[in-house]
Image (cartoon, rainbow, N blue to C red):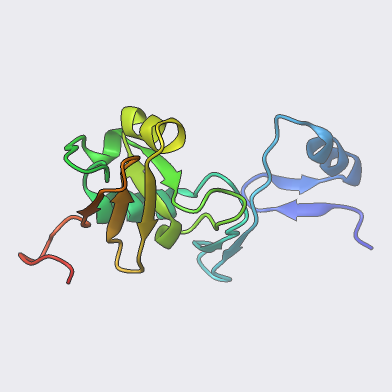
Length: 145
């Protein structure tokens, strides 16, 4: 057994330091796989609640705006929402969407429901049963079909 834990950028941690960090309720531990030579993170544990920076950028880039029908709030100003709630659904690009604070509340407190397919097309169901579809940002001049 090693007498210390090597943490890139930080350096070495003694076992009692690791125990103290893991016992601190304000510390969040994220598991990530990194490239063995560059150290670039290539994978994020999908069980964590908060997405990593790369996942957040991918979702906001795909969405462009809030995904609620008719909303044009820029995705960079939106919260990221799990389509299938956490922890039942993963924290991954295909289960996250950009929602402004108002519409995030609609989804959770006003009876709206949403499903998203692997292309990022969202089908919203209003409390009265009507459905509305929203598409990812169209970067190629045609809508996902």
